[in-house]
Length: 429
Image 1 (cartoon, rainbow, N blue to C red):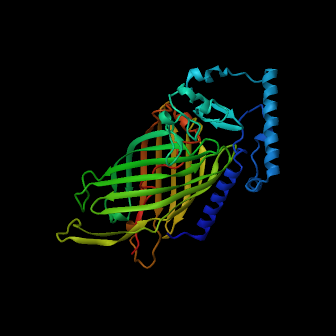
Image 2: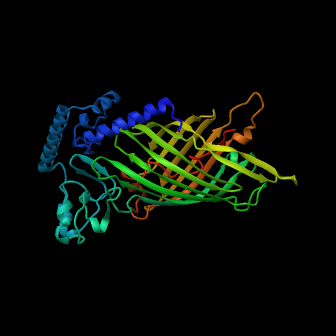
Image 3: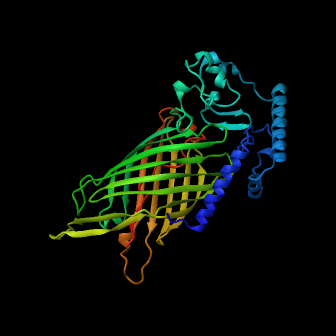
């Protein structure tokens, strides 16, 4: 796979951040969101230079950070004692009450946790003691500290089996690319699921995601073929979300496209961004693949009686774009704007948004346009190289039943499942 030097530098920086986070797991990057309680100095986000220095913190730095956490805990305790903070009834967390989800923000060992979370999964909760003797589920605890037989899987990954971050989507999609031969565009229906879970534990904020999409387009054929167009997309990979600081991930995409041809292709997709504490996020995303698929088919063009042969090699576009993502005033909603280029010198503009409309539903929309380049020699038909996609989907959150809380959860999937806006083919010859 061809990897440009600056992409390699980006991935190296991301890996360095991951290793440093694992080495300093005791020092959370996400600040506790105790507004009007913790001092402004603590709430103030670090400068990029300070964030980079924190990647190489020493033992003395970690000891100092631990003392700071103790001081903050003492400060909060004094505020509770003075009556400045309303005390919470923790009796609902007793073993006899079972697993009770908490909505909003809770603080466990210095972590600020947003959205719907099960306190049993955090250190400091009942953990393994709740499984001994089968009081909760009649089983023993695994290495994750949760009840193994009834609610966890530990091979090959270790995570709680829950539907908290599952989303189901269905909608419409219109798209066009070089595979349309500069003629009819494709329109049809999209449906799919996307799921995210904590990876190994909830201590460090790393998540794993898995999702699939299917599309049925050209239901009545096209001007040059009577075949329907059916596609299947799969996306899986890893990510990390934060309150502020470096955020990103890397996923593998696979596409099967069946029309007047049969094509299978795959790519790597990733993003890395700096998330500001107050509002907004600026970053970079890319797709990369050198996998080619050969086509050797024949079609009958409008007005012709003799077949026209279509043959050649096609591969996914390598796309590179900077983006700005911002939360919307609607709780849990967000929007992203992108601009960049492709490896074959096409311009790129795009945007996507997710807006909650009820407790369980949200509206998801996206578009991407690859701008054809001007060929002064007249050797390239711009209509053949033009690629675009636009989609509108209705998203259902069956378990969280709160599209607002789904927009806050650290372990909701960072990446949308691949579709024709993130996976586009072009001829290499």
